[in-house]
Length: 123
Length: 109
Image 1 (cartoon, each protein chain N blue to C red):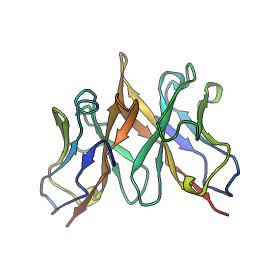
Image 2 (image 1 turned 60 degrees about the horizontal axis):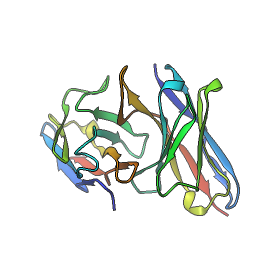
Image 3 (image 1 turned 30 degrees about the vertical axis):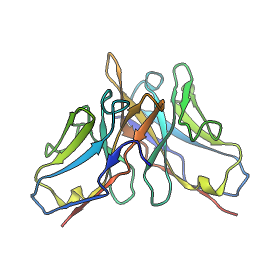
């Protein structure tokens, strides 16, 4: 069974650093892309970026380039989203999601999602 | 403003058929597969349709289609548990990014 299990809720102050995680199980981690999606309070879903654990390839959404770092550790089947200096506007729920791939190709859709990590940034 | 346009809200009664739409352009829907995600009471999104196929465990009252630059999600025989926010999504090559619609709030009366 494919599962993406995310780390727990975080409460941080502005300027602090943070890394949240998404641990994958039930499939070959290095052959599927993992994306991060933000949902600000009361708002819709926004794609932040994506990582290919097999080669550590990454891509970022225009609004998130330079603001966050996405990475993966294939030895422990875990993807990460990190900030070096949080802002109050980073307060949101963050989801990881696996990009769907068949045996021959990958599609531009996500098939499995993590349960979400709530990040609250407040002084 | 989202690259994909969805109705803000749709409602229907139990047993009714409803269709949600997602309007894009040739940079996105016109050239890529579309997925639909269900989010109940701000819980984690759940994939209910991709490439017009049903993921495992999704009831067959859900169906999807695409015509040109518009995708649709149809729920036949609406059930109370279908009340949720629904988001469409695909890739946009002009933005080099995945994009989501603004979401449709489906209310089951």
